[in-house]
Length: 464
Image (cartoon, rainbow, N blue to C red; front, side, top):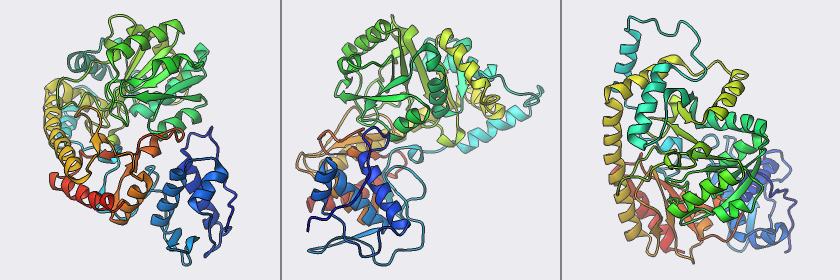
């Protein structure tokens, strides 16, 4: 039967097409518009009707089946579940709300951070509170506590090679606030469009769009962002992850780095450098930030965060930027809040000053390096033909699957075995026929967990 379903999607949305289809069907079921037992179109038919790749619909159906909204039977097609649970059932692949009960959660993101060193933080807070100088008796400076800006400037210069002074550092409540401030400040310079890497974190695309700026996706390859494709757009600002592209792991090549700076100068624009994982590098020394370029660093806004190194719950991040944009960011911030909380800023300054932070990063590097090695070995043994892309770095890895692999079916099959993992398609702005892939967070796992999770993935993979 050539069934039809009036699904509404938009290619201009910040959400992936898969997420839009899932959201539409989920809402129709919840509102009683799609009744229990209703048969839905075949994945191929719906894909043709919507003008999308079949894998987009397959993944949407698979996720909704895993959530309990849909059920599929051989020869009977896909139907709305006859008896829906009264418990809330929500999407699991875009980090929105609770997730199904799983054995292994392999998604990248905040939950994948190894965790705050509690004892060290407690000691730092005690020292701050016992200081003879009164703390927290007035509102913090909008740019951040002076002690933290001094320590951050030293830390960024020593560990990341970033040219920064206390006067060019702005402390923010994580990268999310930094991006919100930039989306509000850039229009003052006549910039209303922001180019982003494609693929990238889907939440960032939505965040930029909700911030009032037009999003312009620019493709990424093994050398990082395609600067020629960027130059073909009307953008005058771009958000990039050059040291360890998210999610592919690509490192921006020297040729592309120079071209990116030339582009920024030519359009009188800005490069927003998101150094999100803080230089966690396990093979060799990590690439230096764009903000270190001998020429053109005045076109770079460098952003860092404590989310990956210490924990996302701290809500601490920082920007270094030329004065002209920094002053505008402070003016924007003055209209929205009264600065970041002082006690945590001063505690982080104490960790940096005492050397505790450096020791923590060394421990974290050893831990994550071991898990990265275990992941590469597990991919080699359990997913024949698959390849881990990029260098051994960061808290996640992108695993390129063999061309014949049904990515959506693998993700759905993994969920049935209580493994939550994202396919590469979830990060793309629109389906482009990219090679099938998995994006795997590994830093939080025990070493045995990496092997066990991939053994289960291997069973699903071998059954395709």
